[in-house]
Image (cartoon, rainbow, N blue to C red; front, side, top):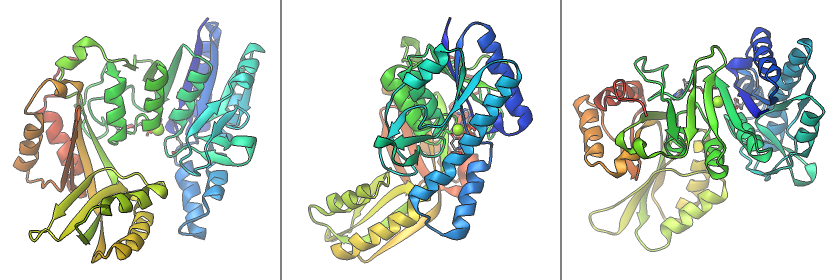
Length: 410
Ligand code: ADP
Ligand code: ASP
Ligand code: MG
């Protein structure tokens, strides 16, 4: 008998018919004699709809109240899914994040999970229930306030629950049948990967491939949770996310990712002296804004510098506010914001052992007239910030240039 966590995303529970189909799959698993914990997202579009409602009241709504509001979407699907399982003659029990014992820090709208007391889940399983947990949410220590885990956070709920109860596998059911060499909705030639390493998946996710939420991959890697990404619409074998294997380095580039949720902030003419960057990024970090790329250009007389950095577009207004204040204190001329950008990236563990990858990327973009605004690299990725309007073109030409449609699967 296996212990299986199954997570179903928004499209997979988008209608009552879809919820019934989920219940069928859950019951099929239970029939096998396996114990099943289900984690569900809100019905597709629901979270965006709730955000829209809040924004009709305020441009920057109170974040505690946002969490109360947004967590309701997942609560609805958890109860409906439990009902659908019961309608098939199996016992099921829905749980909110609080009831499932998911304790987080107090950073509303992007809380981190601190611990999960798996007790209540285990007890319900032991009593023969299918447990259906509302994803994307937790509660602060002392069960004071409801929190949410950031967009796409139900993936994290699933992986964290799987780790807490020591599940045999965490199955992520979505609207594509695995992790592809790039977003199959943009490049139809994209190829499904049979396996991908945690490390590559982490890079792809953090660079925008939303098929898995970044923190869920981090968590899976840290606690060695076996994850498989599959479709809830068919029975195709999915993609296994696993520890790196020897042969994986033979493939130089394994995927292309893009992220349109990017904005570039430039602080113009900051005095060039020690401590400036430290002060600036300290203030931004204390506002819980994650900075990605940073570039500093010193003027030819060496007296002042322009500091540019990227943040998620969803945080850009707040970042400009915070930066504006500190820039004035530091004696900078002004702060500019650019939102018509995106980031395209190539990822592959094989980059560690192969050279010329970055230059091939730059040449490919150049030969299609795509200007590069910023560049950053790590051991296993190269990212370029480009004009937003060239995103899809860049993804397609990079996918072709690195032969991803044809490469042998690992
Ligand atoms: P869910 O609602 O099930 O959580 P998401 O919309 O968050 O689903 O994630 C699935 C989507 O991720 C796919 O529909 C696809 O457009 C996108 N995606 C981006 N990059 C990739 C990739 N490399 N492989 C598969 N899907 C990808
Ligand atoms: N419903 C949340 C979102 O849309 C969480 C999730 O689907 O994973 O971001
Ligand atoms: Mg998702």
